[in-house]
Image (cartoon, rainbow, N blue to C red; front, side, top):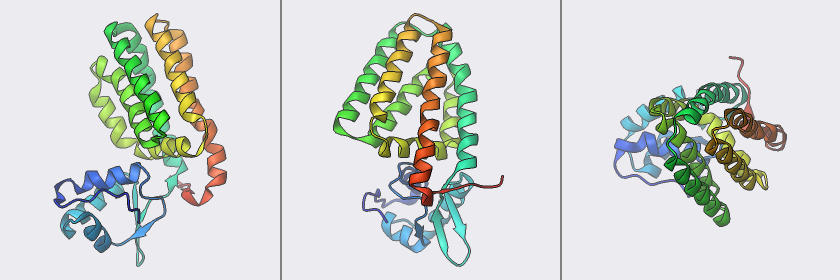
Length: 228
């Protein structure tokens, strides 16, 4: 198991810590472990460990394997596609509403966030970059009073997030391309050109899907496809 894992002495936040380590790919899909190993690494009791694993199994992040142990779930292509559909369906309406409602000062904040993304790219901090990308999109939800929608997306689309992070990790130039797309999106938003905004939005989400095909071939051992 990864040496990057966050150590924990108090079990209260074990679920959040383990979830973060999974969605940040500090734990590789397909890794097998026992509850005892988790308790030792995170310094947590068996009861909170079991409770956390049940919650993570419901989110599709871990898989219980009878007589083998517990596995960090493989990237389920069917689930990722459904999560992508959920995010696209919600966020396209978020963007349309945002263009009609945002205050001009928010553009300055978004521009600062793009600069933060550039800083992450310069340091080659890919996990920090994806966090900054999420923060950028969060602003659109927050500005129009739809933070609950963002929390739902964050909760339900964690497997899609793992895929986004993997794409950024293995595809050269994806961080620069993402920054360019964010810049173009901001230019269209600033003049309230909703048609241009939506065109760029669909292009932005489509870039990740285009890269996925190559990654699935290259890292086939990380993927599965459920029948659901």
